[in-house]
Length: 212
Image 1: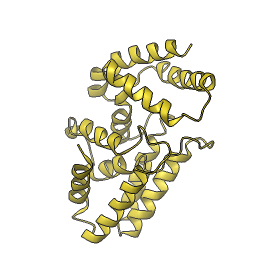
Image 2: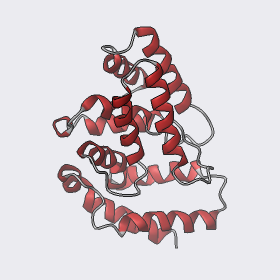
Image 3: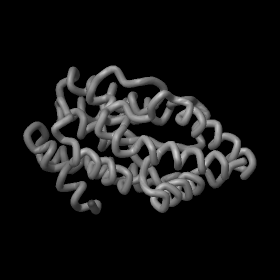
Image 4: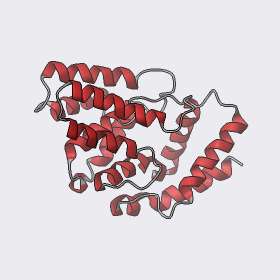
């Protein structure tokens, strides 16, 4: 799914509640944010496209597609790998989504749903809603891809943290990945668990070993 395809999806998604000029204005802000250096080797529109490719395989699992798809578009719109405040990127992404959508006339109650879904991608705890759990699994699906894709992803993450000294990066990355590996299960929905859980654990084990 290229940028034009994503743009078309955005326009179709928002066509029934945003005037065309407002939809185009917000899209341009999204595109500009995701293209903004530094730190966008992975967390760019390619990642958003990949998330939609995962969603499209499990559309029947979504309870409320509109806020879920909006959350996918916005969940990494603010991304600064050098932020020292825990979860600042997710919180700022949620804030920006609410600001732009509310300003465009999207109902505040719906904006709150979008924001809560984005905050679920902090991956700090199991999401409370079914759509939140689905979004988290979509976001984490990269961990369970085939070895070649997983290591390409890891290379992209290292590029995003290129400013971190190697030994510090290895220790920090291993610690984060160990946290995922220590969970009873990585994926909360049956579809993603069956498809990715085993490979994700293999990938994470290999990654942690490579960091030692």
